[in-house]
Length: 117
Ligand SMILES: [Zn+2]
Image (tube, rainbow, N blue to C red; front, side, top):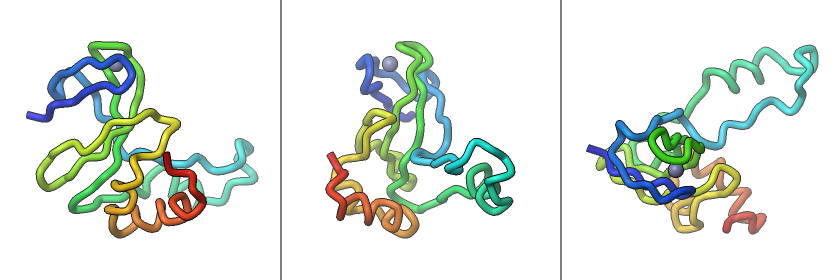
């Protein structure tokens, strides 16, 4: 059983009280005009996801509380949640530094730019 805490309303529950929405931090193509988006950009946005063994960053929805979306950092091996944070926020700096593979690449520039909270 996964124990989840909503960072918005504070509700605690198991995974059946929440809904996992897949990978966090997926950026839409920069343009909303289809003719300005390449096939590769659209493919990456719709289908290409990280699948790490270890630390992963996901979107979750609070189904039995406030109904808001939030982000969670979770270890895919131990299933342990490491942090919950808002959808407009970045994870804690120590977790961004622990990220490996494609997540490490994703967070590298954000840590350098001091965007981490
Ligand atoms: Zn909530």
